[in-house]
Each structure stands twice: as structure tokens, then as C-alpha cells.
Length: 472
Image 1 (spheres, helix red, strand yellow):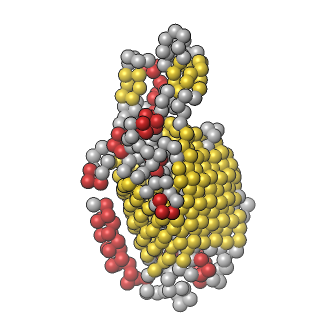
Image 2: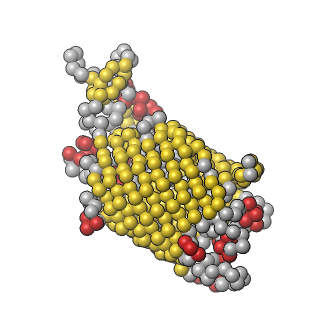
Image 3: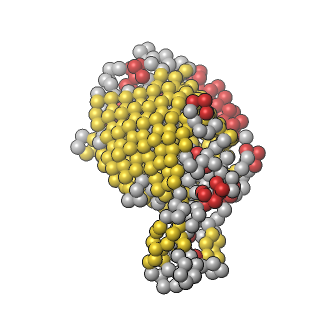
């Protein structure tokens, strides 16, 4: 159903849009570049010429990864105002180098290059090389079982008072208590039962070509080495359920190990994952880093293949629709409604940690839960063979200012998210979705750098995020 709706929207948009793109075009504008991409007068006035840097401290806050600090240095080359493409592209080149670490030992190091309309051609090149490690990835099962509400017993005592539909803080608190197995026997811990450690080093490159001004066809490859470690048998400090005192305890068998032994999942030892990917998109967004209007309708496939050195072989289908529009352009041009709907299906020899890995023409992001999908739930709280989600944001620009020859714009952003997972595509329905809502702030720095702060609530959690870039 999703793909039929996407195709219908694509046909309708193309029917009405294509006759317009040939009209009133500047004579010096390249034939492959759509006039709808032109920046509005205010944005064009503030766009800088030539080269510049936006080096800034990289700070973030996520309940799974932790609170972190680092540094990101962005190099932009915008060209000259006399060039025809200057008014239509966010930049000609961007090189970004980032180093980031958190108080929960999450580490991210990366370097990337993005070149829209490379050498004044319809081609765009993106490259990425990075290393990431996280000691606290969450795992609550795969497919619809991951939707089960949180459950615990008071102070982690067998036979104690049971609580279902718990919030995450109470769930963590209960599991911070040791399981006392009797006099002379060691304390056991379930603190890390739903966690595992994950480390990956990966490199990727993609090339896309704009055709007929509104379509982008693209392909790419990615190579990665992935390491999975569990907490089985490791020592930690927990609280004695009787005295409340801190006691050393040994971690029990984790959920990843349990499901791997039951042959419900594969991939508990990590491995190499190498992809071939390709897709097509209909893209009429006016300014990609911070759009005011336009559509992105996309379908792509990601194929992991043993023939190019991958330890696993599977295929993922991904489709999404993004829309940005100004409902009152004459009265309030700084008010933008942003929406996204997405559906993905994966099948084959899939390692459990890859159910969460989604990829679009705009880049990679995680499964349901966390900043990029379902903000009121912990990162990648829900994963499965089929995942669907919807987001809407009301981006209201409330002010702008200049500081040290830098231009800033401030927006207030109420938002709403929903999503869920299914075992099979034929089970997709309108019931049982997880919901979250919240309020955010966006600080737009020199148009191309977005600093995000979001607070979100759900039945399970209250979460606060700080990051770079729009959610979508």
C-alpha cells in the first residue's frame, strides 16, 4: 500500500510539475538544474561566497549513548555569486571531520565529503569513512516481540510484585538490584540483560545523477567490519535487594545470547557486511539542509552480498515520502510544515544488529526509537523485518541575528512521531502504533548547519536530545 501511494504521489507531482520547470528559466542556468531550487531572496542575500569553515564544539545528549563532547570542522566552498549555480545549491563542496566521545564510552570518528553538482555537472558524489563504538546498544528482540511493554518485578526479586507497561527509568532501577541466589552463592545481575556492545568501521561512496531536473538516480557501495560483544559473565556493581548496599555481581546470560542459542537470531559474533545499493528519488526540495518547500519521494534497495566479501546475504527495500510546505506563504513565510512517512522491509540472512540499519539518499539512520525516528523511545527500541513510521514537525522561525560575521536563525518546532514493526509485510495495519510528541529548537547557522535540541515524551520515557542536523 505504501509503495502504491508513493507511486501515485510521484505521478501526480510529475504531471503538474514538469510543465512548470521549463518556464521562466534563466538562460544561463544549466538544463539539468531546476529553477525551483533557487533560494529565496533573504537566504540568497545571506549566502557567503568562496570558502569558509564552521568549526564548533560537538555536543550531544542521548539516553543510550550518553552525554558527549567533541569537535566538528566543516569546510564549505560556495563558489562565486556570478556563477549560475550559486543561487541554487547549498554548497559546491563540503568536507566534514568529526571526533566525538560520551560519558558512556560511545565513540564516533568520521570524515566525509559531499559534492552536489560535481564540477558543474548533474552528478553528486558522497563519501564517508568512520569508526563507531557503543557499549550500550539496546536489544529487546526482533519483529513484533520487540513491541512488548517493559516488565519487571519489584527490586528484581523472584516472586515479587510485578509491574507491566513500565517506564524505562523504573525498569532500569529494578534491574539495578542483584538477584540473591542464597548464602555462599554469588550475586547475579540482569542490569545488562537487554544490552550489547557494538563496534564498526565502515567506508562508503555513492554517486547520483539528476535527470529531468527533478529525478535523481543513484548507486553506491559500503564495506564494514562489525564486532559484537555481550556482557555475559562480566562483573558489575549492583544493589543488594535487602540492604540496598552496593555488591559485586556477575551478569547473567544476556537476551542476545539467549536468542542466538535458541537460533532465533544470527550475527552474535559480528562479521563483515558489504553492500551494493541503488535507488531512484523524485526531489523538488528547494534547499536540502533546511527546506521550506518541496517533495522527496524515494525507493531504494540495499543488497548485502557474499560475492563481494560479506558474511551475510540479504536485501532491504526502503521507501519514503518527505514533504515540506508553507501553508500561509504570504502571511507567515517563516512557518513550514514538514512531514515524513517511511516503510522498509528486509529479508534473507540478516544479522540481528542490521535490522536497525536504514539507509536513504540523505544518509543512514537507525531503527524505531531515538532522534531520527521515534523520539519518545530509546534509540532502536523496536526493530523488525518490516518497520513503518511517520513524523510531522511545525517549524516556526521566530528570529534571526548575526554574531562575529556569522548568520543565525532560531526556530521553535513542535512535533509528533508514530511507528511500529511487523513480522511480515502482509501484516501491516493501522493498529498498535507507538506514539511520541514533543517540542524542539533549531538554530540554523549560515543556512547549512542545523543545531537541534528536542524534548520528547511517550508512555515509556521522557527524553532530551542535542545534535547536529534536522531529524529529517
